[in-house]
Image 1: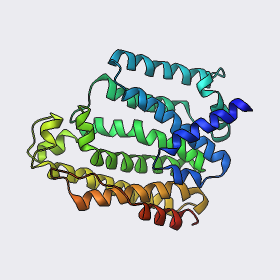
Image 2 (image 1 turned 90 degrees about the vertical axis):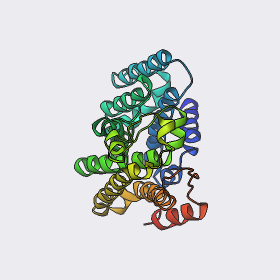
Image 3 (image 1 turned 30 degrees about the vertical axis):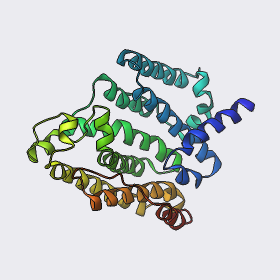
Amino acid sequence: MRAEAAAHANHRTTALGSSFYPAMRTLPPEQREAIFQIYSFCRQVDDVTDSHEPRERRLAALQQWRAHIDALYQGVPPPRLKDYVASLTTFGLKREDFLAIVDGMEMDVLQDIRAPNMATLDLYCDRVASAVGRLSVRVFGFSEEDGIALAHHLGRALQLTNILRDIDEDAGLGRLYIPREDLYHAGITSNDPHKVIVDKALPKACAPLAQRATMHFAKADEVMNRNPRRVVRAPTIMSKYYRAILDLLLTRGFAAPREPVRVTKLTKLAILLRYAFM
């Protein structure tokens, strides 16, 4: 019991740093613990990806995570995943979704992603965001069909918003996620992040990405609007929070220099009050 309590406290502490924490807190205890676990898993794998360790060590660490996942599903969970067993059983969490998250993180380690084609970017979004969604919708209680649809659209909406928000931060890491087709259409032929982020044509390259994010938010809303309130409460809060970020980005624009955008505490509270008790 002490080990389980300690694991719960650790997952909760990790989740405290997430912008999704208020949404997680609206869930009943069993669901909340499962979502904390999913977020903690993602955070730990992401920390491997963004560490300053040599690529070989990061790749080895990600491979170790794959081995841990396999062991978990073979009934011999390693200590770091032992408390996940109950959530797997209760909510039917799938091994392939955990592995997809690791695969997505590995894409950032194998080489710095710079101006991927649209197909590669979509695969990346599916692995690092929609796979997380596929785990989460099972916890929320969605049906298989609507759950997969919501994970597809909301995951991509959130990840594309992240990409638009973090252009400068990603460039500092040597990464550029804006697809090459959009760059070329805007007249940008370089894939050097430091050159692209100061290019006067960058706003034109960002516009299609923002349009795709907006479309995915709308599709996600369609799915949530036809499902019970108790099921959609948490993902609705997540969606509204990130849609507020996208709106701020569109208002600010993408021309350099770009001031960071932040959703105010008042806006966050308004979203929480409106949708936590829906």
